[in-house]
Image 1 (cartoon, helix red, strand yellow):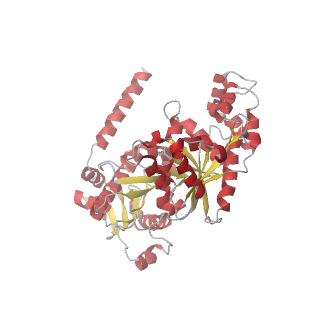
Image 2: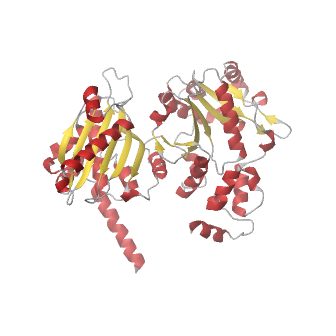
Image 3: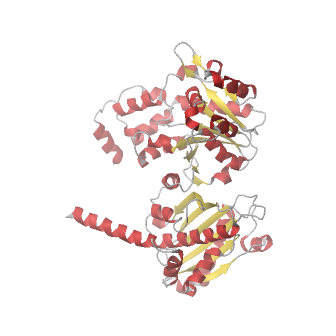
Length: 495
């Protein structure tokens, strides 16, 4: 009976969600306008007053809008919200939300018992006349789900991809309405996230950062939502820092020298750590690299997360927890090919240096022409991007039968030898010569099998901090050597 009730409840919930998702932008705005308990302010900088305009056009806007404001001039903006280094930035957005929400509470105190207040803000740079800039910006909503309660907050960053400023303004207006509507009428954070691009055709808007917080969303893990952004093709890359807070790629990578290590990290072993440390030493020694302006990223691809089937959220968090505990910035990407990753990252770094750390076996895949069949120019086209003027690959050795496999004995097809020699001569490839040869026998898949089977000795193959976390939290289905019953180990972890 309980199962039948649960099934009926889910069916009704899905039916309700489908009805909400089928609404047009105008219908969403009108539904909010006709809800007498929702009331707030709009502050929009750049790309026009497009969000507020949708509420005015829907009718009944006096039931929703307490005020709209647009301080385009920097002096006016500073006078209202305070000085800020960059006007299209998260700090400016937060100043706007702080100011506008405080004014609502201050000036509408007599309505606080019956009204759910909100402050909506955006600061956006649309496409300029020359079409030479990267259009995008910050959108945020501070909102109550019940009167007289602390507010929640949802902040996103968008890139507007239309090739016309009027179309970009229209897309901004739609996503703004979607955000307000979803925050009030959808209870699950993932539903709020996926609803942002409703009524927008594919390729118009990219959402590369999403964060929701507040008393009604205390159990939400924004790292998982970052994963959902990439899984749902709302963006190709998402970032978060060692503290688990989500980061916006262009803000963090802007004109930085970026060093990237791609891996499965299941689990992080001594080899992973040595690759990072030794690779970073090489990167810092490059005369083109500003040593004080480096960002190091540990990258997980969707392909690596899907190995063995569907992406498991808990497995993803296991890997991320360990990387964050080691002080790493974590990047999730949907770029299996290195050249596509480099092409994306270079839009943020401009002429700063990009370094990739990879093993010899992965370098062999880079030279495998079967990966480039979808390119008109084949491997040469991909290499034109991968080995741009500001990119370099640092190659970590592997253990061979009799000696180490390095660039010195790296073999390619005869027709590619000239290409390899060209890259070597132009300093596009460099051996990591300071690798620790005593750990090269460690293979992460073997370590994982030992962890899960209760076999002793795996602790010596990972950093002490990693071993402690795995044992404490029962990560990766850890089974203690003295307790081979896997189910018992899993139940401990669940409790």
